[in-house]
Length: 64
Image (cartoon, rainbow, N blue to C red; front, side, top):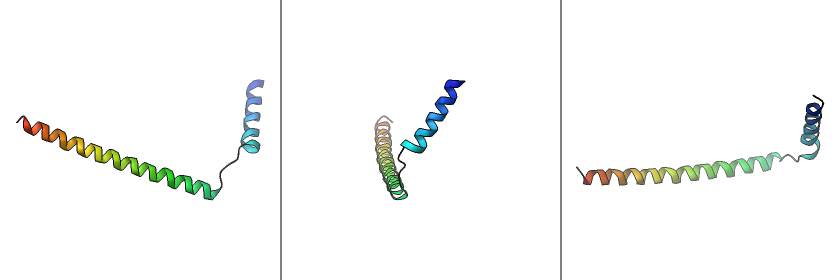
């Protein structure tokens, strides 16, 4: 139990004294970058899905 309380005390000290937390401007900028990248990758995957779906429909129509 003594090791666990030392771990909690050290973790709290590290989070409050040693960690540098981002400011509001940096946090907003990082969030926008992540949101933009997510939307971009989502669009790429949607286009790939559309192309694959169309290709499969074309291939299946050849064998009817």
